[in-house]
Image (tube, rainbow, N blue to C red; front, side, top):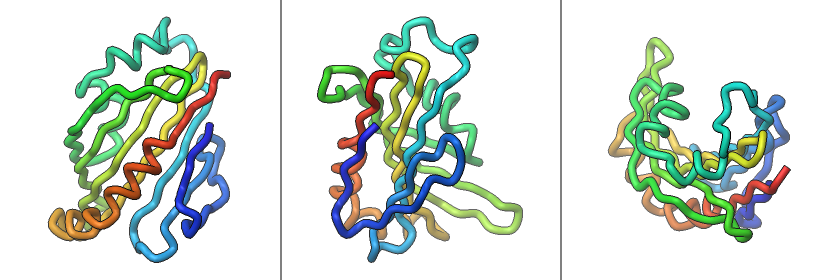
Length: 157
């Protein structure tokens, strides 16, 4: 896979088998972009990964990604193409997470694809104590985040 990030952003080493990279703006506290990819179990996998991505729906976002959050509202789902024409899905996500004593609100921009027996995604997200604070902090970063997420490429196996 590849990802293009602004030169001033910092990169952290992988933190597990599927987590390939975490990048963060040096001056924007709270925003991080996680890049993940791995092989997946072909027994439960779609027979045609390309068609699976092309036929993706809001319900698929909810089933595949949304269950990791307490609340997850996806929007702006669209089909895009890698430079070689292979499909990738993009979407925004408004979410909450609850650790038992604190509820955090967040916004994410995702790119997700499946190629052969591999999946990969980039998730740029920001969390704060309220949805209003998330919106205020996201606004000045939105264009930069969009360029980072749109630069994601999952190469063929």
